[in-house]
Image (spheres, rainbow, N blue to C red):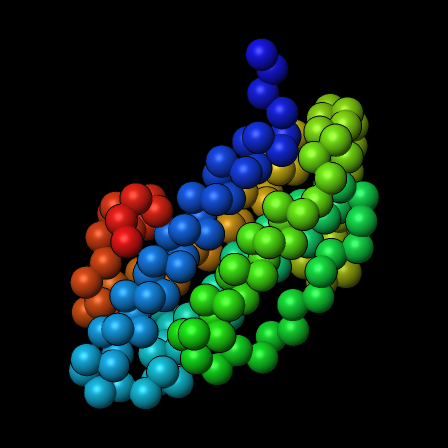
Length: 170
């Protein structure tokens, strides 16, 4: 049995989506318990030059939906950056998961060593083999931004742990 791009993506991204949903639920519950408005924690940053919590979660969905859509050869689902609550962020993550799972696996799996060219920052493009793009760009960025969101909540005292980040609790 060969391992396909879609099977790697579904395994890894499902874990990321579960983890983000778990930490969002715990963050929401802890904020409510402490009497903190969602907006306070959603705008929190680890460092002044880093994106705020909301943007970290949005980037998880952006990298996964855009990246997987590129691999499938289709336009990505629209995910406007309008979330102002934990509940809205959880809905966004669910929508991202749904969009990725709806993509044609045959198209994703086609020719894993072929090159794919994609935007990589402002006014820059990169070209990588499709398999490398999935593993070293899409999945890595999703995990990075999910981990940063986790770390923000952890810094705020939300009782999250490794099992949550691995998508194994909840």
